[in-house]
Length: 97
Image (cartoon, rainbow, N blue to C red; front, side):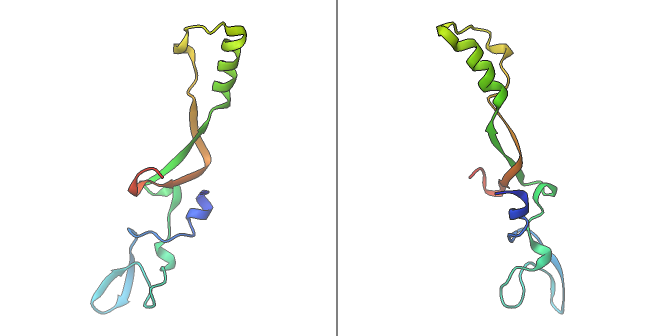
């Protein structure tokens, strides 16, 4: 999901100040609907994880070295095969999707 999409989802760990007696904090309204202060924070949350996506630089590096079956052994010069997405992520609270 994009970060903006996640910011529209309810976070079970978020808490908001309750203004009723006997309930110092809450994360849902009286009818069970998510409180607007208890939605996902996206990248501002410590549980936020960015998706990993294929690295175009790795594909180019690999293509240059594997043409005509001349694969070299200089793997130490290879760029990472995946990189962090700049748009998509997920809540890492329960692990990777």
